[in-house]
Image (cartoon, rainbow, N blue to C red; front, side):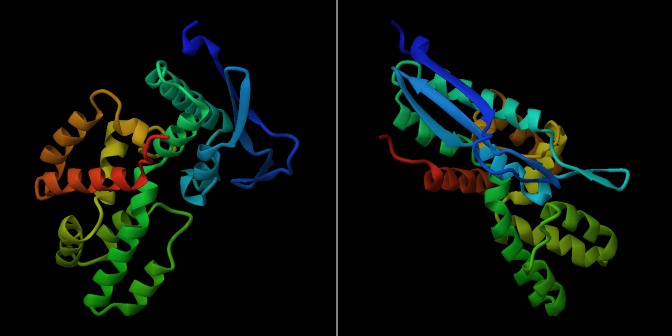
Length: 238
C-alpha cells in the first residue's frame, strides 16, 4: 500500500489542557495529531503560537480582533497536507516533525528583530536616542512596518527617505517582504511562511514586485538573505 494511504491527521483544540489567552479570549490551545503506520504523535500548533502574538491582531474601526481560530486551523491543515504530498514516497514521523517546524516558520517574524535593531542604530546615529530606545523596546501590538509607515507622516521627508534607503543595505529585507505580502494577498493575518515562499509563482511575483515598487532595493542581496535564513532554519535530513 502506498505510504500516503497510511497517513492520517487532525487539528483540534486540546481540552485536556488549561485554556490560554488568544487575543483576549480564553480558548483551548491548538494541537495536531499525526498517525503513520499505526504510530501516533502529537504536536502543539506552531501557527497557534505564532498568531497568538498581539501584532497579528486585526484592527477595524478602532476595535481589535484576533484572527479567527478557524483560519489558523485551515492554515495548519493546508501545511500538513503540503508536507504529506511532498514526502508521500519517503514519509516518516521524524521527517514530518522537521519539515513542519521548518515550513511553519514565518519569514516576517524571523526578520523583525533584525529590523528592530536597524531602527535602533539608525535613530541613535541620527541623534535621536530617546526614539531609538523606545523602538528598541518594541511595539508588540503592531508589526514594525506599520510603525515605520506612520513615520512617513511624522518624520521630515529627507530623514524618512534616508531611513528607507539605508534599510536596503543595513537591515534584513523585512520591510520589502512585508509590503510584498500586503500587495500580493492581503488576507489577515499578514505572514509569509517558508511554505508560502515555495508555492508556485510566489518568488516570481516577488521579483516582479521589487523591480516595480522598490527599484532601489538590491534584489540579489534580498534573495541571498532569504537563502541564508533558509540554511539556518532548515534542519538536516533525519
